[in-house]
Image (cartoon, rainbow, N blue to C red; front, side):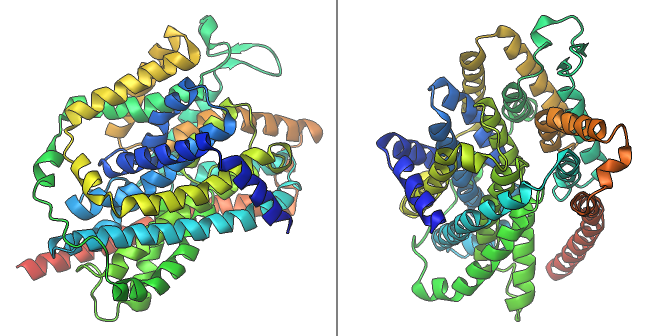
Amino acid sequence: MDTLAHLADGFAVALTWQNMLLALLGCFLGTIMGALPGLGPSNGVAILIPLAFTLGLGATPSLILLTSVYYGAMYGGRISSILLGIPGDEPAMMTVLDGQPMARKGMAGEALSLSGIASFVGAFLATWGLILLAPQLVKIALLFGPAEYFALFALAFMTLGGVSSTNQAKSAFAAALGLGLAMIGVDTQTGVPRFTFGEVHLYDGLDFLVAIVGLFALSEVFIFLEERHGQSDAEGRSVRIGRLTPPWQMIKSCTPTMLRTSVLGFIAGVLPGAGASLGSFISYSVEKRLVDKDNSFGTGDPRGVAAPEAGNNAAAGGALVPMLALGVPGSGTTAVLLAVLLSLNITPGPLLFTQNPDVVWGLIAALFIANIMLLAMNIPMVGLFTRLLLIPPRILMPIVAMVSFVGIYGISGSSFDLLVMIGFGVLGWLLRKLDVPLVPVILGTLLGNAMENNLRRAITIDNGNWWTLIDSPLAMALWVIAIAGFVLPILVGRKVKASMHERGDEEGAISD
C-alpha cells in the first residue's frame, strides 16, 4: 500500500502542465534521435543535457525530459532498422533481422506499429518492475559498507561494455582511461593537486557533463566531417509504408512473445552493465528457440520484430533499477542520466528514496505518462518520422554542434570548458576509430572518485588490511559476479561470432 501511496504522490508531481509538456517534448525529440542512424539513446540524452540546464529546469523536470528522451530513443531506434535496414542504435540491431524483410514485403507500416506496441508492453511492464524491485534493492543496499561499494563499482566496470564490446581488452583500457581522468583535480584527503599541470581551471576536476557532450555529441560531428556520409536520403525515398495498423490476429499471436521477452529484457537490464543490447539479443535468441518451429524467423516473422523490441524497452526500464537504488548505472544511457543527477546535487543510492521521494516517484509516474504518449504518438506519426530519415546529415550535424556549444557555455559560462569539450570530442573520435567503447570512459570519470574514496575508507577502517575487500559474503558474491561478468562475454562473443559466420555461410549457399 505504501508503494501505491508513493506512486499517487508521484503522479501529483508529474501531472503538471510543465512536466507533461516536457515529457511530450522529450518523447518527440527522443523518437527523432533514435530514428536517425548512429545517434541512439546515449547520444540523444547527451545532446539534450545542455538544453535542460540552459532552460534552468529543476531536478524533477530535467529528469522527466531526459528519461522521456531515453524512452523515446528506444522506441525510435526501430524506424531506420525496419525501413532502411540500418539500426538506429545498438539495441535495434536484432529488429533488422525480421523488420527489414517485413518492409520488403510491403508491410513496413504494420511492422512499425507492431514494434511500437511491443515497445509499449516492454516499457510498461518494466516500469512496474522498477516500482516493485527498486525499494527492495534499497533494503539490501543498506547492508553495504565501503568494501561492498568498492566491489559494486568494480562489478559495474567489469560488466559495462563487456557484452557490447568485441574486445574485453579495449573495454578495460577505456575503464582505466576514465579512472585516470577522474584523478584530475585536488585530492580531497590530502589537498594536493593531481594532474592539473598548473592549470587553475582543473583544480575542481573535469566536469563530467562537458566530457559526456564532447565524447558522444561532438565525436559524432567529427566522424561525419571525416566520412561525409549521406546515404540515408537516397534510400529513404524508396520506402513504402503500406497499412499503418497491424491486424488483430497478428497482435494476438505476438502477445505471448511480448510478455515473455519483457520479463527476459527486464532481468537483463537490472544486471549492471548488461543493458538493452543484451536484452534485445537474449529476447530474440530465446524466442527463436521457443516458437520458431518452421524457421520463419529472419524472413519477416512478426514475432521476430515483437521479441527484440519488447526486450530492449524492458531492459531500458530495468537499467534504471540499479541506477536509482544503488547509484550504479545499468547501461550507457543510465550512466549519462547518473551524471545529470550528480550535477543536480542529488546522490542516487539507498537514501534517494527517503531524501528525494518527489524526484524518484515523480520520475516513475512520468515514465508511465511517457509510455502512453509514445504509443499514441508513434502509430499516427509514422509517416512524419520516416520523412525525418530524409534529412541529410550535412544539415543535422551543424545543429548538434551548435546545441552542444551553446548549451555547455550556458551551463558553465567558461570558455575553458568549451576547449575541454573539443578535446573530449577529438578523444571520442579517436576512440571510435579504434573501436574502443566510450561508455566505460564515462563511467570511470563519473564513479572514479567515489570508488577511490570507498577503497581508502575500507582500508583505513581495517588498519591497512587489504583483505577487508573480500571479508564479507556480500563483497565476495559481488567479486564473483564481477569476474564472471568480465569472462562470460568473451566466451559468449566467440559463440555469437561462430553462429554469425554459420548464418552468413548458409545465406551464401542459398544465394548460390
